[in-house]
Structures are given as C-alpha cells and as structure tokens.
Length: 242
Image 1 (tube, rainbow, N blue to C red):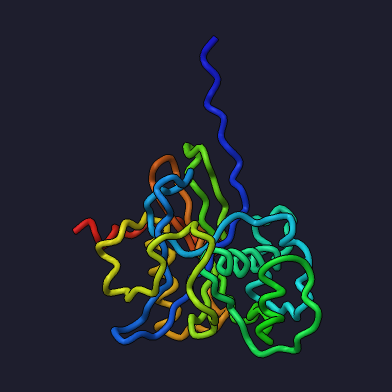
Image 2: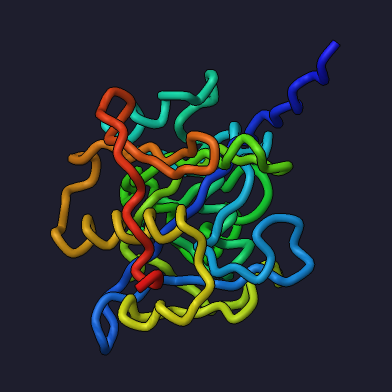
C-alpha cells in the first residue's frame, strides 16, 4: 500500500487591522516586526492581528454597528461564527499589540469582559465598529504547519488613540510611509492586503462598497478573486522583485 497523503491542518480563524493615516510624506500604515522566536512568520513585518478567541463571541457593552454589507460578507466562510467576533478580535488584537484604541465618540456604559473594552470606557469612547471595512480574507497554504483563515479590515488611522506600546509581540512598531516599505521584509499576502487597502483609502471608497478579496494558494501559487464567485487571478508580482 502507498503512503497516506500528508494531513492538512485546518486553518484557525484570525483577524487583522490595517490602519492608514495621512502623514508628512503621504499615506502611512502601522506595521510591526514579529520577533525572531515567533512560531509563525518570524522577523516579518505585519499589521496587528491574531486569532479569534472564544471571548470575541461575547458583547462588549458598547454599540456594535458594523456596516450591513461588511457584516454580510463576513458571514461567508465563517462556519457560523458571528461577524462581530472577527471585528472584536481585530480591535482587541490591535490594542494588545500596539496599545492603540480604534475609537469614536459614543455613549459609554459599563464595559463587559476583559481588555480592551474597559480601556475604551476609561477613555470615554466607544469601539469604532462602524469604521471597519472588510478588505480581504486570506487563507494560509495547505502545506503550512500553522494555518490561518484571516479577515483583514481597514480603518482610518486618525481614529486610533493612545500611545504606541503593546505587549511585545511586535517589535520596531511604528507608522511608515508607503513609499518607504521596500526595505522591509513583508510576505506576499501582506503586500496584497496593503495594496488593496491603500487603493480603497486613496480612492475614498465608501465602507462596504467593494467586495472583500479572497487570497489563497493553489499548491504554492498565490491567487485571488473578488468575492466568492469572481474569476481567479494570479497574485500581482511583488514590487520588490524588480
């Protein structure tokens, strides 16, 4: 009998947040470098994010109004997980890894659960769920030992309040002009997500107007499409390949 095919790891749900703001030299994005001992993408620059925790299924105690189109798109491939769980995870992970709150003026009641929701209440603000656009769902290759099914959101960095700090998961954390990213070590999926996020931010695409992109791999070949029924397209070549 032949050998059994290698077991494919089921991807874990995760969420990331692309924060873009206007800087002195054009648009800036918040990035940090994963430390060299990280079990996934060590020494690679990424946006803040991480896996969806069970607590992300619970209400925060604040108004939680996602754009209806964003909520609808988040249901695709969610295996029943509520759309707000991904949004809560993105905001929570951003606070944990950067110390920043994606905030807006809101009626402040009693926050429910652990961080970061009490920090919002202390700041007299509410989480800016309505400011989140759904940019891309990205799935790690089947050959990876650690696999993630990540929902990447975009929000205006001007809504991020607080002081950059974080829990140490991201090093060299800071706002970087898009024109200065060429020397950073960034993987293909992050390049794709950043390009799509920058397009939406530059063109001032309304939240929920454009369908989220799906980025995944066929073997070792990266590909993407618009929504769930668009034609597959090859991933664009990296600008650093030139």
